[in-house]
Length: 312
Image 1 (spheres, rainbow, N blue to C red):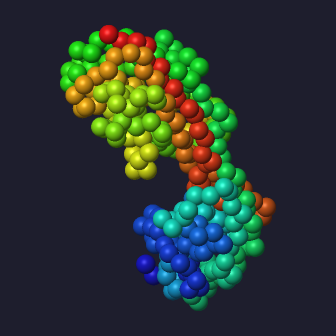
Image 2 (image 1 turned 30 degrees about the horizontal axis):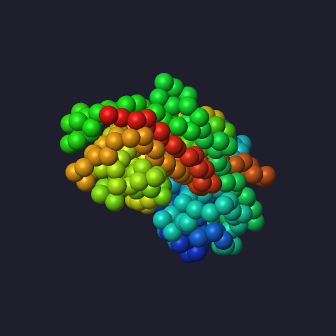
């Protein structure tokens, strides 16, 4: 699009390390001191719709077009500010919170109007410093219900005929409640255990005898099995809001593990749920600059004990 009239145009100085596309324009993203965290700079009018980022091109690119029928003094008397938006790339490694500062100095320019009659605004890095806190949940507890109390889920009594071949599995629901989760809008759940069935890696085994011929499987409510100690097995829930209290719903199934022989008696399995959380935060800085950041929360652990009374 040609540079003309009252259009808002921009270009980068050549120090951008990557780009993304917003509203059809490829915008420049600049480096910070944290690997995998980059930022873009956006001009925002305080009274009118015009907004636009510094473009990826090193030549002026129109990022907001003003209709030719508008008054030629479209920008007269208007005020605005610059927003700095943080983006996370695939190179980012979740940590325990970061203090973020820019690496690039002179990043680019905005221009209002044509080359012969323009107002140029040169953008430096603003020397910003921002500490992104590590959001987390304060506590994770098993919610009391008919099936659960304290740290135990009770699956009841079974006949061996009910377990052999898993012909009619019983789904026993339970809920883990997480509190103090301000800023968390993405919950990722994994399962770990020292006690896994030698016949099926998806089952938790009896802590006293893994050779019982059966075990317990844990599923999310959308029927995804959580495989113990498997980094690639997880349950993910996203929510655009950030409620202080969140719930993770699952169900347990006592099952034949394929050994072929089932030993009766009381059964107990122990698993640990590990919760990773992502958070999107927006920070308004001095000088009317703003940040939008994506980060990960500290791991929180809740221990899950499954107590299965004697079955016949």
